[in-house]
Length: 248
Ligand code: PGA
Picture 1 (spheres, rainbow, N blue to C red):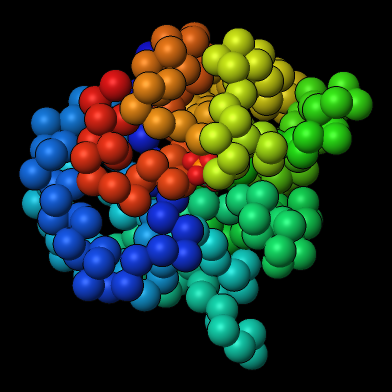
Picture 2: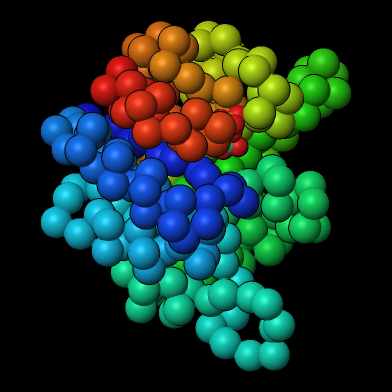
């Protein structure tokens, strides 16, 4: 059985002080969580949030990394730096990074390999925009994004990583994919993994859904057989709301 993951993506929200306050509130609310909880904070909050979750079962995540270990890349953060900080997970290829920061399937793949190479667990995001869904190319697109992200990644490495299906039209819009749409597309992503590495590996990979998840739609989504968890943006910024999602 795949253990569910509920991951918070705070995006560019929360100062260090606000991050600590939110985390402290969360810790008391979700101490008895029965799923893996990951909090992906802005880089500057990682250290403070790490202290605030010390001794709990909550995991620390970052939202991006650079694929080189070090070098003349002004403003970037590497996997070595994240690892030393105690980061365990890292979101890679979020649609906002692809859209606003020119990330491509190729850089996503380099980042995935850098993360794995330094013992970080990637949460790799794939997903279509509205036009692509309307054109009926969602399945082809997410399959291709998945296969390109996993180029050169072994099956042993693949089974430990996390994928997230995030339809762009559902992110921050209040328009959630229906649980059937989410389940169906995630089954296509799993099929793409199976085409690379076989059914056994594909059956172990955890694949999340993300896009306007809230306390009201989470349990329906989690009842779907292919959906192994959620990547939560807006609703993760409020401790009570996020705790309700964690305890779906
Ligand atoms: P949302 O964001 O929950 O605010 O739609 C999800 C995400 O972008 O990871």
